[in-house]
Each structure stands twice: as C-alpha cells, then as structure tokens.
Image (cartoon, rainbow, N blue to C red; front, side):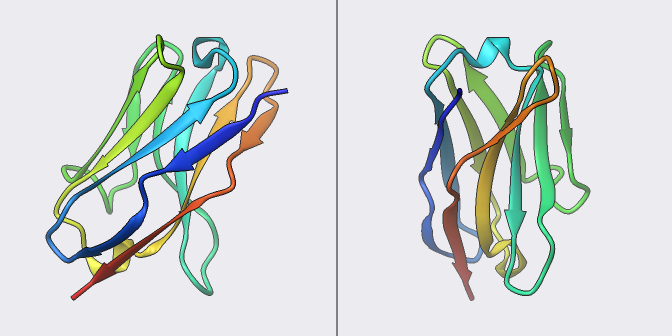
Length: 116
C-alpha cells in the first residue's frame, strides 16, 4: 500500500508561482509513473503532467511551458512547479502513482486558487 500526501497549494495572484509536493510513503522509483491531475469545480479530473519511471515527462497543452514536473527519488517526492499561473489553473490538484501492475494510488488533493 502506498500513501501519497500533497502539499504546497494555496492562494496566489495571477502571474505568480507555486510549487506542489507529493510525498510518497514508499519508493517512487518502483512506480511505473507519477502524475499530477486537477479537477476544477463542475469539471472532470484532467491530467496535468506525468513523469515516467525512466524520467520522461508529458504535459497537458494548457500548461506546457509554464509547469514543470520533477522528482527526487531519494526523498520519494514528486514536485510540480507552476509558473505564470492563470485563473483557469484554479482547481484541486491531485497526485497519482501507478504501479508496475497498473494499480493507481491517489493523494487527498491540495487546493490551488489563482486570483486576478
């Protein structure tokens, strides 16, 4: 069983930055992939960024060039650096880990609110 705990959310003005962290109870290197997802009010949950076990990354078009996903395997932590934040980035951000057997683990989410 893997537990994921997100932190770093908050209220920020448009154009500002935040860094989210996702701390795992187990080794993230054993995960097939780690990712950040978000869900805005009244919308479906969507993928934001994913980092594979091999270190390759993928981003939603809406955040390319503004967000960066990274990891620190020694700390079993995945990060999401969010720059040039927009109001439409307001959402609850969730961390997800996918095991080698394609079992998903989710964190509890952290709220990001971008004000104009």
